[in-house]
Amino acid sequence: MLIKKAEVITTSPDRNFVTLKLTTDSGITGLGDGTLNGRELAVVAYLNEHIVPLLIDRDPQNIEDTWQFLYRSAYWRRGPVTMAAIAAVDVALWDIKAKQAGLPLYQLLGGASRTGLLAYGHASGKDNEELFDSIREHQADGFRAIRVQSGVPGLRSIYGVPAKPTTDAGDGREHHYEPAQRALRPPEEDWDTRSYLRHLPTVFEAVRNEFGPEVPLLHDGHHRMTPIQAAKLGKALEPYDLFWLEDCTPAENQEALRLVRQHTTTPLAIGEIFNTVWDYQLLIKEQLIDYVRSAITHTGGVTQLKKILEYAGQYQIRSGIHGPTDISPVGFAAGLHLGMAIHNFGIQEYMPHGAKTNATFRQSMTFTDGYLHPGDNPGLGVELDVDEAGKYPYQTAYLPYNRLADGTVHDW
Ligand SMILES: [Mg+2]
Image 1 (cartoon, rainbow, N blue to C red):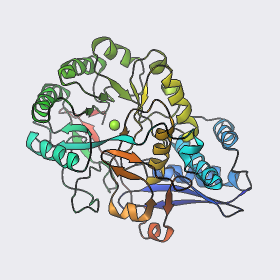
Image 2: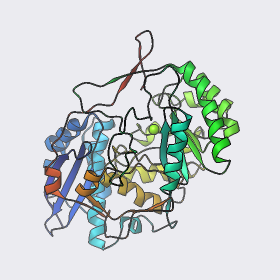
Image 3: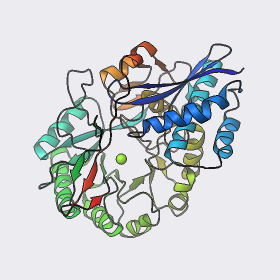
Image 4: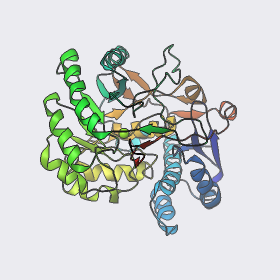
């Protein structure tokens, strides 16, 4: 079998997506996700200029060899652009192999270790009243685990809380949070860590009082705290029994988590902006985290994330695969298949895509009573409608960035 065609398809139904479509001489096609929010066209160029020419007439069946060839032959390794491009190829090859076998991908990865994947949804509100409504809506949709993000008094806007309703999910309600905005420059937001640290424990106290001790609650700190601030927050949240505190410090510095860990038993999750196992080396070996947050799309595909999670499993660290709407239905499906097969699955992030995205990418996955399943179609279970994709050309869009009260740029 040989790869005969490799197309990079950029589409923007509800937001921008980069998809690689491979076609073999036997007519089997495979899809891979190379979406990098706010830097999509860099991956498009990397694929078109440097990878597509290497794929033509290559055997799609040798996935490990292709991964190692693309990673090592570039010489300049790692980084989100490179690893998203490699992920797009890797996932498309797994899609082809599973279709060739006539099996859903999770069967090739070892088969089902569970009947479904526990998902968490994103509840948020500018104040507790809005937040409680959002939690109730998510519970009505079937979510059993809830990420809680709240506005902070004195701040105009904040990560995780939509300023206004955004995308219609197709169910008659507008409950999406989409931080990237279609604009020529990143939008500016404001930030004050002390206000956030004072306010957030009161939110979790109110949520526990209203919704009881059973519901698993999560929170994302989005890389904004110093290690000692994160340690203080982790301690302050201990009475509210979080499932995890995510991205409490900037992700570049693995040793920061050592200090946080010394001070709190709140479980820690990190890794959505990591690209390789080397970003996790210290964190896993020293058991400084509890959950691996990488996405298939930004970590070089199924081939590498499976290895990272197997390594993490030796230390009782579990998966929390990244699943916001900037992971395309292709990348999301790949994460579901991996989550079905590994032993150390933890939880799956799930933000439903919008109606236009779901019409562009037809998916076999299901969400029932709080559990996701990738479906049993051969391959990933995702088909791209190229005509539909063609209706929505790429639009420049950027994630926001933060400034403090004195004008200093801060981590967003
Ligand atoms: Mg996050």
